[in-house]
Image (cartoon, rainbow, N blue to C red; front, side):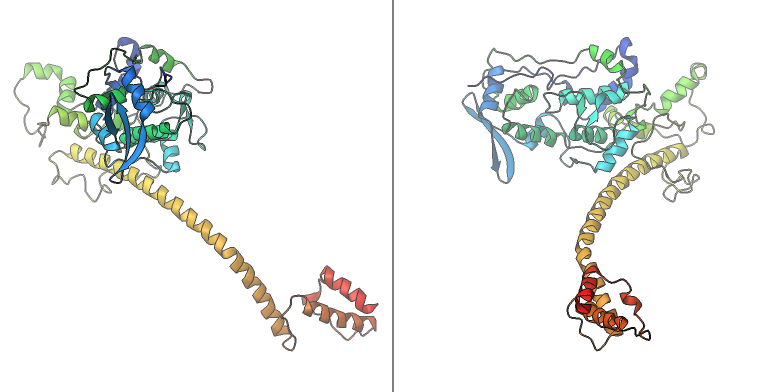
Length: 449
């Protein structure tokens, strides 16, 4: 069995601990802990070197019932991995997720993240982001991507995954991992790809098989990563771009009220009169629901310093008059006016993000159709110009035959040349032939001679 090379910086375990020394990264750490990829970032199983090498040495691509599988033989038993099994084993809920975005949508989102590099290429430099965004790309690049080198470069699929993750769009991480494994089957130089994930897949299929004692070291990102993220890049201005509003933990209404009026809460434990807080909604949601959709529970209407992702400059008025036909005094949907307005703003943001992506796709399709039509119409336009010219000549000289291109020019110019040679001043030249082509002029000299 061939010994495969290891890549210490590949498929690492993320470091998501909050300390006093990384206070400026607490927001992005909280976001990753609440995200759907938290389990895949932090799971750290026992990795057997023998099992992982046996898998990659015997791995082959196979189609079973029109579904692609990667089959291998480990410990004398057949194992099979598919996109669906990756989704189940890594706890991804991305069966209906997307796997690509239009180029323009990617450039717009990357620009909102504060990227200061070239926005005409689809490979981005990690050092040209502010620290929190740099840490996000760094973590996903080292923990989930199939890369083994060039860690400062962010490929298109990782950029798309981060954009979807930060804008509440469902991305197919299972397909990202499975496609990377399929490409690795045809690689000339193989290494131990996805050792953490392969160990999880094999552990679920080889439950009754004893694991060998030769353990593969699983590397973990340490607290030193934050000191690297703070360092200013060579061509980076140092401008800090905050996270998107939808990525932040939003306080509930009860927490906001307690923080604003602590003395009143201590002096008067009785509930507030209904006249002060009319139609206050009750927060009976479970903790799981709060962690999944924290943005919907926000009732503080103060403007957030973070930009809203992928929103065009010409954003419509959201004061209540143009917000989906609902006025600020309409309370049929919610008892609290602030809750209704905030939810409408959130729905509007998501709707506009979807419209921008759809319009970008439609623009690309229309550009392709226009290019195709131009290629088809070019010979037709040339043919019609020649036809119009021939029709114009036939109207001027109905008795002549213009079946060939230069017959008219040669015959007419030769006759006119003889008349002018004899000094007949009464003959008027036709302005159509004021400019005599070079081949016609040569013919005139031959006839005169």
